Length: 310
Image (tube, rainbow, N blue to C red; front, side, top):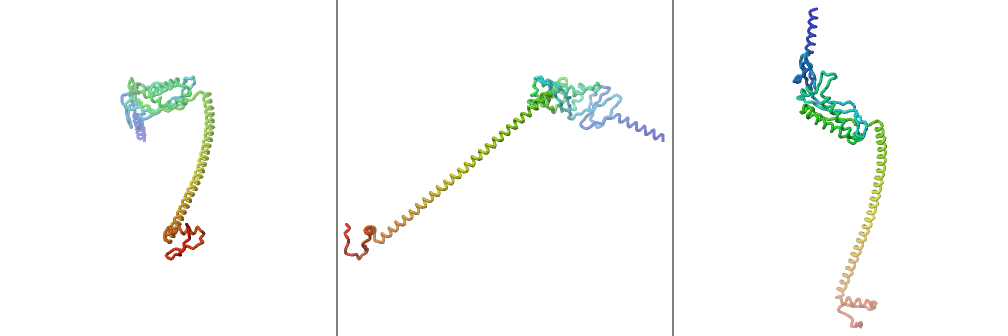
């Protein structure tokens, strides 16, 4: 039993020793080695790396996108206002092939406190740039007027800074984006800004109310004009219809008169033909003008007496 226990202890010690000589490297990260505090010019991709824990120290390096956050800081604007930046996030990525030169120059893992490459390569330069920019702008410009440009300007500056930081060569650090929370002005100024904003809001609300009333009145006027035009058009249309009816009626009466006149003419012509000609018909009319006192005979057997009508 004692031999088994001894074997078990020895096995456990062996396992612990083996685990002490290995390090797991997560996906998206690499390992670097410091041998006797000196950086070895090599990277390890894992997933497991074995090393000598007595002489070597292993570090895990993130080569994916990471975020560096600046601590809150203050600066003085050009109009002598104290501006507070409460939060600045900078997203960046260090390429694998640049890990060794960047760590060799900027990383100090054995200093106390430790110095990370992010400090001189990103954070310190970001602080310096934002404070210098703060001195060139008024508080209101930083707070509102030019705030929308701060993020892009910071990214552009840090990207340019990376081009020569590694002994005149690019560092391989990609500055992807930045997010700067709106800086704040001194409390009394912020209070005044809020009061002004409230008054401005009330003014705009009243202005909008008046504008709405004006538009409603304009709409009402347009509707009234449209209705009047509509009624006028109806009246004009009615008069036009009446006129057209009168024209049609006059044309109909003229046509009827022409028809009656034509019928009378035809009757006269027929009667003249029946009497033997136009001269006989005219004589008939002459005798009728005398009052129809005598009988007029027509034909072959006529009386021998003719009145003297000359």
